[in-house]
Length: 502
Image 1 (cartoon, rainbow, N blue to C red):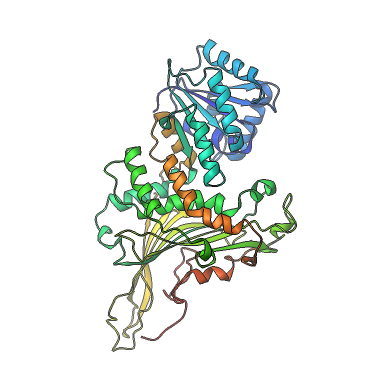
Image 2 (cartoon, rainbow, N blue to C red):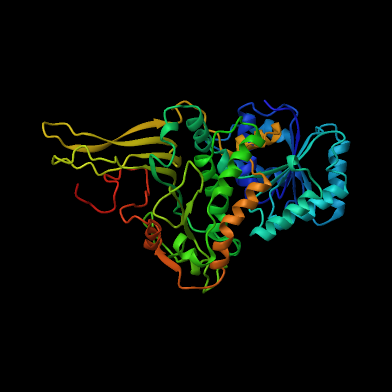
């Protein structure tokens, strides 16, 4: 249970608030995890009054919550919620907001300001909040939540940070990456640092390479104009996938305190070898989906999507090979891949172990060519799977692949959305699973050479049919031709792309 606070949501009529924030807060209320005095103030300009807003909120909950709406919870939740109409560009709105929060005894002094807005609005809203004395902490703490992207490149990220620093301390800023709230992602830390059996193997001596994959079958969902300004590299790699990489590669922090965790993650990001400007095509592959079939349905190509330029070179697929130049990971490639209109929804970390240095069965007819894999499923299947070679039943000395499966969740365990856990962390003031500015800056340093190379049209844009696993050119990121992409959690049968003799 958290202490009571006020949660002010700017952009409350937008997709993020209606599809994620309000359902998450509803589930927290249903589970008894919100303090009785916590209040929610939705701010927007589309709805004329509270009654109209409550209809919008109920419809949003009905379409987003798990299971059926509980009318008792809906009634209780509605009593927490109020609506304030206004234009965020109008200074008079902030005076009305200050009066609402100060003059009503129903609103706790401790306040979260959630920016469910486009990043271009952050600076102006913060300046208006500061001018209206709404960031004054004389009566209670103030915390500001920012959604990605945190800039569009390194210079814009620095410019945004300078504006933030004019109004806020770093400990007041919560840069949210909802990926880090996923149960499986948190479990990576527990698996690595709460168990001793994997630590001797978690290094260059035993691991051949590591893949971090996020594939989704859906397209851009009518967000053509927005996606044209971002692309897969900004949308997924710079934030989610690089953060996953730090969780997999980091050293054990001295504690779970935010500063300790951020320090170890930052060390990993700083150890990633820069991609030379003239060798981007050797380390990065971009693609764009063409027309195809997804889940049995024919879909159009990216360039035919609404608000997409006819000759667009925006990537809907991005794959990178990165190297971490430190003692633990020297020589181990990290392969990152993300794409839209892929064959199926899949997010996983696939760790491929090296083959034994001496083949035990070399004098027999037995072929043990398959590698051992540790697969960490993030979504839609949360699990951990260790693939290994065993003897097949029967007289003959034959081998086959089997797996040890560990589910992170029992059948009766509660399911919590990532936003639920992160909202609780914000109310507690726990910044451990939020991004520090240093991490953001270093992540932009890693991808900026690729962004600059991809900023111009070129023959390095590879088209792939919707419903596939992306362009075949991504295979070239594997220096060893026997390595291959893991697309799913299903057994691959062999750890090599080609069958080779022993």
